[in-house]
Amino acid sequence: MSKVDKAKEQIAYLKFWLGVMVVTDISLVGWVVSSAGSAPAHQVLGALVAVVVITAAGFAVHCRIERLIDGLEDM
Image (cartoon, rainbow, N blue to C red; front, side, top):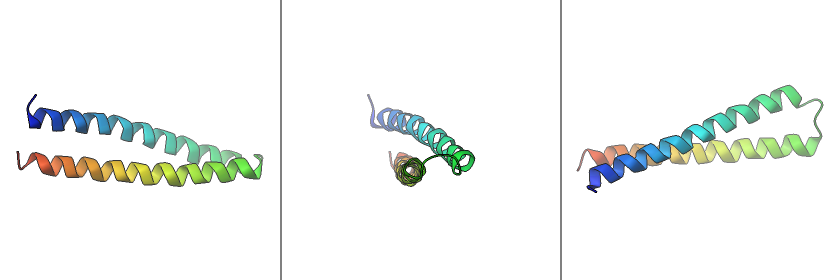
């Protein structure tokens, strides 16, 4: 497998996981907005922590994808 093909496969795999993170993040934010008043405080706090962690991880994956795409120009 050539380096270009390998990089493209890595990008496709990372895009899949980025999509999973985005959907999870949106779902958690929606749950927090709709259940903040009725849910126990520890669940809301846990969801907020999860939102921060998933958002940060999504941003890291996005940056990795950009680096891989920029690296394709050199191949």
